[in-house]
Image (cartoon, rainbow, N blue to C red; front, side, top):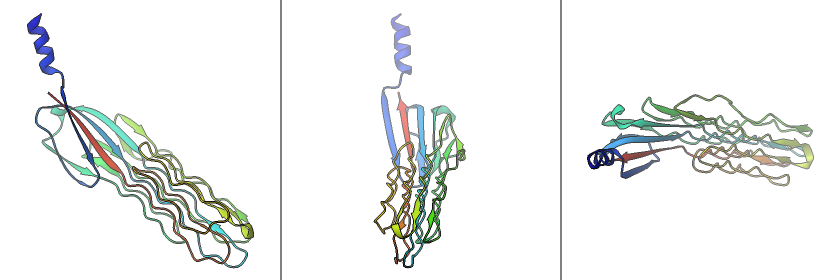
Length: 227
């Protein structure tokens, strides 16, 4: 029995190595690795911008979608000595235009999660308008666990009464940027780390174009259980 207990103890991981990877590069397998938990978060989409407005007009942008998330737990023996890691950037906002998509994050070809879709903009106008929020329900993902990012919120143009911008969608590892209120003219709020969608820009009358908030950057977290 003592021999059996010792054999079991020798196989149980007793140390944990945690690497939070915020920029693309190469992961090196730690000595004594037995199991590896890989958590991958894609970058958030930027919010839609608000076009310039004339007297009596308003404009707004929807929120960007949160980045997708994927996760796997794999035996260390199935991994090479090194693995290429890509960390997706958050989408950039565009003054008066649609927001850019977030970038895909990946751990080799084993686990990957797409970035969120950028928000869209309305045309400036004196009447009401409310475009549908941005939502890609089945983004590209690879992994044992797969979670799509939350959709960006709609915006509402109210003509001479102003507008509301859309909130960014949440990611599994980060919240979206909040929307902006009716009496505001401003760029959208950025998405939070990691992977949150950016909020939309908003404009009241007689304003220059505004950009949507940038999406939150992605991340790759590798947790290695060692003997």
